[in-house]
Length: 296
Image 1 (cartoon, rainbow, N blue to C red):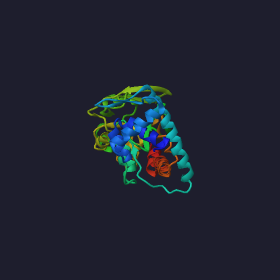
Image 2: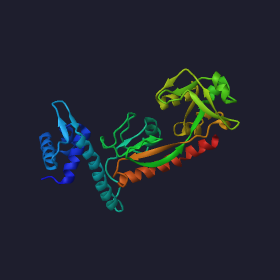
Image 3: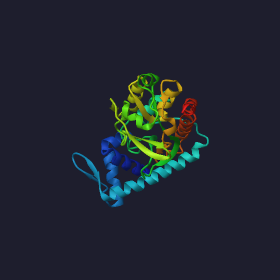
Image 4: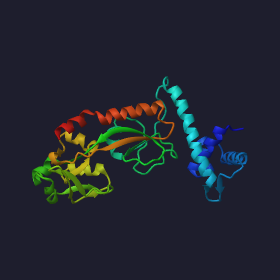
């Protein structure tokens, strides 16, 4: 007979995968065995947890309540076990990471042989992801957060663009320049600056608006226009002389935080702790990043 924790784990997988077959594949069981286990669990509790139809499964109100408690209990069990073994265990296993493609390409790919990269919204618990990198503010999701680094945005352009079109001497000059904007960010066509101690927003426009920071970076390096992106995207290019910061004295000093989000119970796993420490060192203290900030 399955233990209570096993029943809970199978129930959680069924709820998150939305099918007996999906949960069975995760657990290495047959779909019929999973269905029987859920039936026994419901009989033992004396309540229906899942409504079954020929097309899909749906949690009952009692099932929703039970799922919340199951996640808490299993997370606590995993955290307790991880805490006990982490002091003597070496990092091991496959680490599943969700992050932005531009961070993956510029920061992680050179150092990590295997990780999952996607730009879509991810259910960390349902998709068994260990770490997700998110830019704040954070929602109250029940996930554990760890601050990685505070970042700023930098306005910059290639030397070739500046040679052809001249340097903007004040924020208002951007109205006559070609500016490259990130279409998926609200307010990406209104850039903030500090003029005489006051916040001023400058509406910008240009030949290209794209939803990929990496595409805009390559366009800016090629001389297509002026860019305003996060320092983790442009700092290496500034360090290498491919881009030049402009309007340094007027750039708004706003900061935003990059967080690592972790499902409950994962933060004590050695592989996760080592990876988080790597991110803090890599993104916070990279020599090229410090050099780029000095050039500003």
